[in-house]
Amino acid sequence: MSFETPWSRAAIQDWALTFDVSIVMPCLNEIESLPHCIANAHEALATLLICHGLTGEIVIADNGSTDGSQACAADLGARVVAVQNKGYGAALIGGCNAAFGRFLLMGDADGSYDFNEGVAMVEALNGGADLCMGSRFHGGIAPGAMPWKNRYIGNPALTAILNLFFRSGIDDAHCGLRAITRSAFLSLGLKGSGMEFASEMVIKASLKSLKIMQVPATLSRDLRNRQPHLRPWRDGWRHLRYLLMLSPNWMFGLPAILAMSLATIILGVALCMFVGVIPGPARFGTSWTIVAGFLFTTGHLAAIMAVATHLHGVREGYRRPQNVLKRYRHFLTLESMLVLGLTKITFASGGLLAIGYYWSQSSFAALPTILPLVLTAVLGATGLQWIFGGFLLSIISGHDARIADAIAFSSEKEFGEKVMDKAA
Image (cartoon, rainbow, N blue to C red):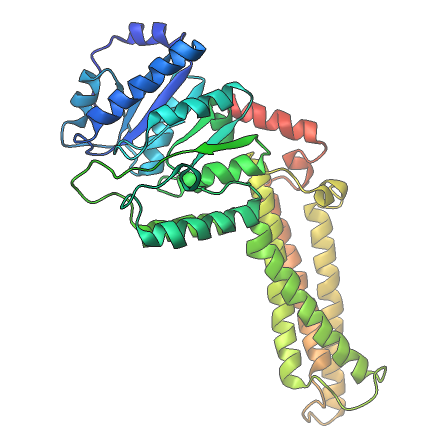
């Protein structure tokens, strides 16, 4: 059942013209802590009005509470927005989309954060920052406010991986108190419905080179008598998998380089010894050449997946195109990939015929070495991957055979216009 605030739609629309700041809280059965949080949010808004002349509102993004949280919030002067999609991230996305402020300050509704500390975050946004994160490790964590595995293992490890992958330069990527400009929020196109929403915001802001700042934030024990919604192992895995899914270079690119490089070394040495360039006994026999063939074809497939996921990120508007792809965009077309794939398959077919002819002339005896067969198989397999990959990249590019040009690789200006159009 939807819940309506006692305010009229006309009054909300009139006030919307004057709001500068929206304090958004996700809510699911938080009636015990809501009075404290809303009173605390009113204090922060009063400070912003007195010190900076910024007006504000409080938005409670309710995710289906059954304890009367909606009526409690409305009675305390907050605007309640019903969010049907379940999850922490879904609630915040729904609340921020419904907010009227040009600055969005987010914090949990469990009493663990002090919204007065969000004043400095709004000041940072007003000074030109796009996103301002709170740092609990700089501000302080009250005894018992954070489980030890989260404080000393989960948060530091996930934040370190995030910084390694995306170079965000922050030390607490999962702080629940954060502020972002409305324009930046809309441009990110956030979709994470669960706790991974916290990582998604930082990742996409880093990928788009938004200006990110950080201020201290304190974490207190929450005011609830029930178990928290956070599930450390489940939500930790959701964060980690999201980091991997948004990092094609680390998920696919690095394994591709390592696998193909090792395979090239093994097959190169084996081929040189086979033709007599390197004298002496064979250093890589049948087993190693099979392993090398597996490594090269697997690495080649991973490389295509790295390009595909990179193009997907560019098309979605949260990733900038790589310079190497922009430079060779005229060659990255479906037709060129098909031609190259078919060429490799043709040579591979010729190689198989030659090997078959040699085998028949040897009375079908076992081949003295499988190296030529492995090289031919690798050539044919990667040719097929070029063909399938070409169609995959074209589909990702909007069913356009001009793969790179289809997603505005011609200039950074076009990329910026694409992002702005999507945000609007």
